Image 1 (cartoon, rainbow, N blue to C red):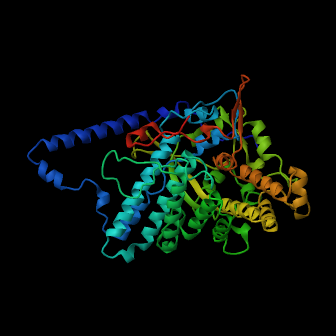
Image 2: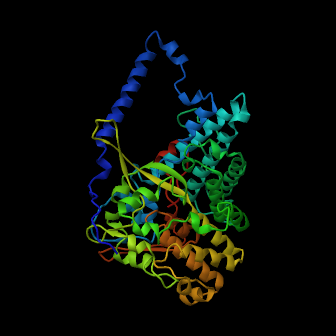
Image 3: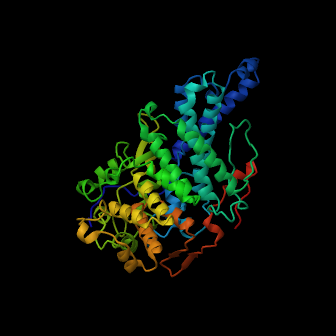
Length: 508
């Protein structure tokens, strides 16, 4: 392990860093409101009202629709609150105490509504859906609809994805036996025309049905050649990765396998996996930060830029990965070898551990400004996840040899000084390590690999949800906090602000 100072300042009060920006924005909004109110009281109000205040309503070309679709991806992320509620974190006794990490650790509803909070993510998803619906409306009304087919496909995929993430986080996991009665989230199909549109939640089964409808309608329409930077949009491969995840969560393993295969057009799977035990080992943390979420990295299938202050300090939060969790997650695995991750885990100060993945970059409000917003580039879909989804689908389809082959391909890119003679995974080796039958041991291997691969990215929570696994958090003052399999707090609370639209809160 490397002990290096990454030169990152652990600034306090990160939610107030952009206070001046917030005040300035509020002042600007109030100024606009006052200005419009004044116009409405003058003799020129008729001309003012004749002007269309919504630029999105005047989409007159496929290029303009494409520009709008750049905003149809959730420009917020879930990493802070999903990582903090998972079993990847411990109480270090000291460190940052941002509510987006503290409250999930204590299994409490997050009251913060700023960047990195569940409410911010909820709002970002519905903003993305609004943009997608506006784009679809423009495609439908265009005089030459044939020229808008690719834009229509992307809009449908974007609408499906945002709703999928919402139902995953704010409703119960899909269950063939209960989802027809479990409350879902509002599935919005048309552009909003009023300030407070009333919505109903319907059911999880209904939401999944609508997601599937949009997904299947949109995927064949995609045209990868029209993208300047394909990794920032739903390409065919990214859409296949999404479909593989969707059908895995829906427990339709044959379809999940089929779409996962679409991510890997040839048998050389390792060619698009991250080279953790080769190229990555030779890079500094700054080089890794620059590369991990780069559009030219083959493993990144879909990237989105999101506002985030959490990325600046996640490793120094009090409730985060410590030495014990680092050992638990990264030191041991079924191959008998050591993860290359552990050799690129940096220690910053006392008991603060970081793998260089998500790097914040600061965007100034203007050229001469000293205030601005922190952003991160987040991989929404990766080759690694698509491979894991294929492995899991094969496990449930009883294709254990195929699953083991993929596990070995993955391990060959992750184990330090990999040697097939000693590190090859077999069913007997997995059963000796984990116990259980072949399927159970293979699944346990997969879940451990996934946990290590996506640590500090918030992905672990989705597996804990799907498998209804309990989570235990301990505190330095002796508390033992348990989130049981049946606990209602496993479903993140619907934001209070959504009540204005008639959305019922989740039971507590």
